[in-house]
Image 1 (spheres, rainbow, N blue to C red):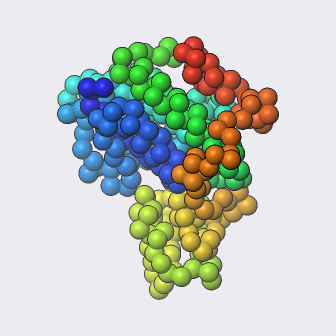
Image 2: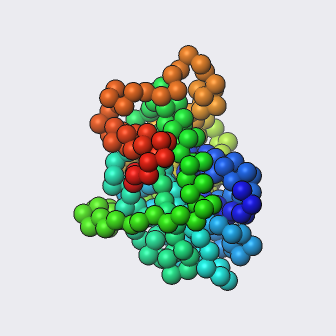
Length: 291
């Protein structure tokens, strides 16, 4: 593809970043990826690019607040084509409404072509087994090139009204306010070795090492990167502690393991995923249906 693409991505534990890398590959490497973090005002604007992408993990059927703030800041000298992608641990159709506010902000400045949701391994609630992880990533690897071709052709998606989903999304934006409270309830226990990995990796610049222990502020985005990657599992995430999932998924090893099937028959999947993967199968056969 000759078009130059810029992809802005917010990724807590790496799933959305992995999808962004697949988009770059699908654009024949003609894409630059920039991470949305607390210093997003330092990021380059998309003036020298042809296509703009924005990716994020779905939080309570919404985009994280920092993604909304970045969208307000994002600007360009001329109107360019833009696409959206998001990730989540399940295939519920409510994820489709997560971009409602984001679209309202961006459509005044860009031509929004389409969006796509990718089911990727959970970093909250429960840990997916390796067979399900391979199934998810296999489908993601198939769907991204399909979507990239649509984007390169400039195809526009017809947006369907989703009033009930939008109402639920609006009500659950309370998570943005809860995140500030959540940050104050997080702490590290005696297993902490003062490695400062959490401080260095926090995209919100919300953690400070004081007297050898991490201290958490009120700028948390609930990305759980600090807890997920803590080598000692020392970080408690407050009221969400029982939903905590820790530790990187060994995706590269899983994808190379030939003993793990690439996909799982739809009828053997949980009801959380059946509708989503039926539609994914239709997409892979070039029958465009909304996910």
